[in-house]
Image: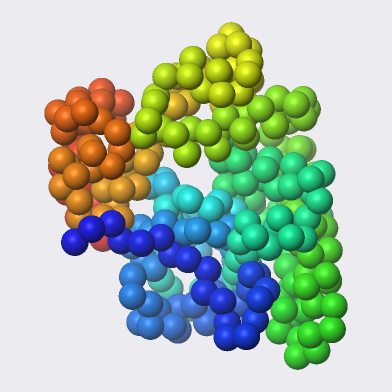
Length: 295
């Protein structure tokens, strides 16, 4: 069996809007309809906002379990791997949207807010209830859900765009109060370009100097930006990303180590295994066994 495909955004028939809002309960009730188990690690090709209104539990994002309570809110970025803890008694709302929806509906200044919000190197993916209630974010989530469900389509996309923008700005304002903020917009832009380049080119090179060259900046400046945003050097960021990508592939495919090595740009399977063990203290096969025990 080759790579399990990414979970793509499923457009509704005759609907071009790449945006959807639904309840957590409806997702759990349809769990048996999916080709994949949402309680197992799966990679998504769109952004998520998950807001919990009732119940407690854990949600796993990139192999890290996050505990939630009523009022907790999660932000899951396109390309991340996550898994639901299924509890039919829990309630909440889920908002999903694609890059296409954003590029069509948000201006550059708006997307900068999104980059900061969905950059898991800048912020934790979970917001706790007290911050959300204080800023009346929950009311905005409900308004988005109600607008999406409203049967009059006049100006629906424009209204959803404005509501989403307002939500992103409110959440960004919250995050500025609870975590150090990188105020240098140029550095954020450089880091996001670097992040995209790594995602698209890590199978060809894992050399930080190469990426600095692609950005037309010095290796020293790239390191300075990476350390300010992630706390690590550019090389450490690249290595961490590659390790995470190996974990994602191990979690979402049945590829052999030889096949995985080829796909990820390693000359030999032994080189991938050594690299993975150096950074995780586990062989890929050991990591895969742990995942199977947890599933």
